[in-house]
Length: 170
Image (cartoon, rainbow, N blue to C red):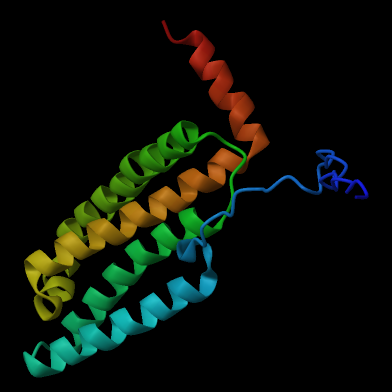
């Protein structure tokens, strides 16, 4: 009887690890970094506010003031999310906070004092609603101050000026 030769199992060369074989983790899609998202959100918000204003019989001036207030806050959030910054999150937040509180609130206070002194405050606030005008104007001007603060965070001349002031503080 002839001897049967046992078949040896096939051996394959081991795969060498290369960078092309490395699996990179898939990053999740972040919809809030898309400009389209913020534009669509703004359009839906305006439509909803207009429908709310019409169904509840809110005057058009007050509806427009509400729209401007909400869109200013959405605009700031969208700008912060979409526009990259070379600062750390802590530094950028500091500039936004200082801009909103110091610049925005300061401008708002000056405008309110001027409206009270000149007597124009009643003429402006009555059609818009007194409390609604005060809160909305404050929010809008604080958002504008935050934009100014973010602009100052990108200004190199301001950084050198702020550094000198920081060095003088105890």
